[in-house]
Length: 173
Image 1 (spheres, rainbow, N blue to C red):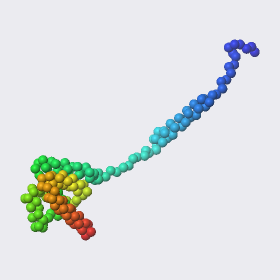
Image 2: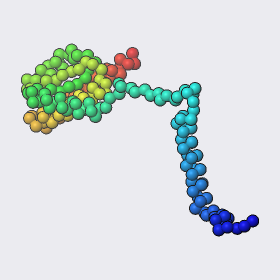
Image 3: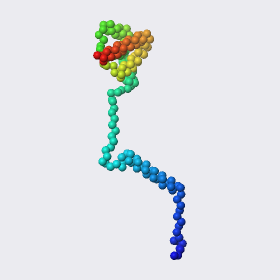
Image 4: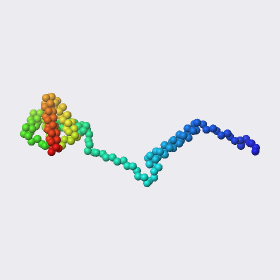
């Protein structure tokens, strides 16, 4: 055989370390892609059912802080309209002559109307009333002084305690 310049065998290049790293990185990348495909169901055929997300939302739950803010806004609107009211809850409307006389006295002396709600005092309704009364109490204190506001707060606390005791006695019966 004759050796020609064009047919001389080229020596094979030796594999470098970078080539080995590149091959390993490509295998890891391909394995990651296939793993993700499997995880998200891309590889599975149409015969396999999809997982479904199931959740329930209880819309009855409210936010007492938002209810209190609404009560404060309502109180400010009532003050602008010229109303001075206090809200409380009771199991039933007050029938006692003493209570009726006291409510009438508050209205005559200070112009404060006492609104008694006979609905059940839910946490949201109570938060609304507390926010409402907080603004009204500040206005009553500004108009009539600290002592009147303190007396009003004591009566509000007594009314709330009576409503709570009546509600708990109905639940146990």
